[in-house]
Structure formats: C-alpha cells, structure tokens
Image (cartoon, rainbow, N blue to C red):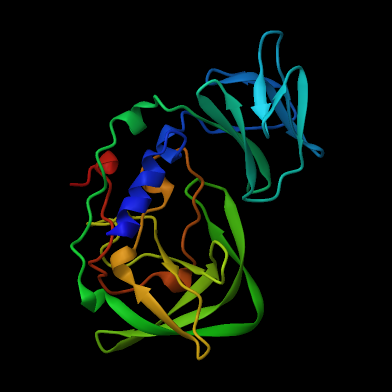
Length: 257
C-alpha cells in the first residue's frame, strides 16, 4: 500500500509531526522556550525572535543572528527555521503565532512502530459525485485544541451511496491539483478508529463530477498521535452514522493495537 507507506514516512520523518516537542502560543511578551533558541513574541507585524549572542537560526538558507522578523504569516502557513539538527516551525493557527520545535530525537518519533490499519477491501472504494456550490462556502470547524477554530472555504459536497443509503460529505480544498479533502467521523470513531476525525484525500473530479471515495485510504491527522497538533475537526454534516471499517485505526500511541 503505497499511500500507507507515504503516510507513515511523513510521520516518521526526522522533522515530521512525531518529532514535535512543544506547542508554544505567542503573544506580545517575549518568552524563551526549552526546546528552541531565542526569545519569541508576536504582534501586528508577525512573529519576532531575538537571539542571544552565540545563538543562530538558518532561515531560507541564510544564517540569522540577533533580532529576526518572520513577518505576517498566512493562516495555516508557516516557515521552518533550522537550529542544529532541529527545525523550529514558525506558523499561524487560529489567528495566533505559534512556535513548534521539531527534534529528530523526540521520544514519540524514536519509539514509533507504525499505525494499525484495516485490511484493504474493495467494497470500501465507492464512486461518488462532486456537486460544486454556486460559491465557496466559508465553513467554521473546531480544532483539536480547545477554543481554537479553523475556517475553510468549502467548494462543494460529495454525494455517494453506501449499503443502500445515500450520504453527502462537505469537501474542503486539498493540496493542489484540484484535489479535495474530506474530514469525517463514523460509527467506528472512538471505538476502533480515532475519535476526533479521519481524513480522506479525493482526486480531482472528472468532467461529469465523478470522484472515487476510497475509504481504505482513510488516514489519521497528526492530532491522532500527539496533543501538540491543531488539527481541524469535521463539520457536523460529515459525521456519518455508519461504520466505515476501513483505513487507519487508533494509533498505538493512543492505546490502539
């Protein structure tokens, strides 16, 4: 399963989500953190770090010392600043600046032994129909971090049939190329699969709107593995009342087997 290996490789990357050692929310007060150099703060002009003498970061291939301004970052965007063998993620989530260091020797990463998954079954690969909205609909969803919200411009919904019943899932923009992203829960959530959400990547719709929903590729978001993630939760319409016994299960890090 190439998609499974790709998912696990991203997690196990030396600077992937399992390498995160802290989620630091910034405000106007400069603060130092044990897993990153410098004193950090954020404000109207974005994130700023002030490095002490002898401290250095590499940003965009350029060494920086003293004060460095990262500027105003896009929501859900970010940059990586290299510090030795670590990468300091500087990002914006829910309108707030964050610093999220990623260290290759993080215990969660070094102990990672893979994610339990259901055996692939063709019956969970179903054809659906993408129905675009007249205009993208701003859709506010919750997050793995209490009190945080994400807003996505939903371009449309995907209608499909499963077990003789008709369903529809709100789709969000995927990672380029016309792909779509579907966040969902189902009757297995919190039982054999992670409670908060799973994600399904859907390829670009065909000319007639046809798409493939392959639930065998239902993946976990980073919040399934670590509390240091800010993952979005599914919109209310995407809570399926059927058991999707396919894709990734509860990670071992959360007690899965």
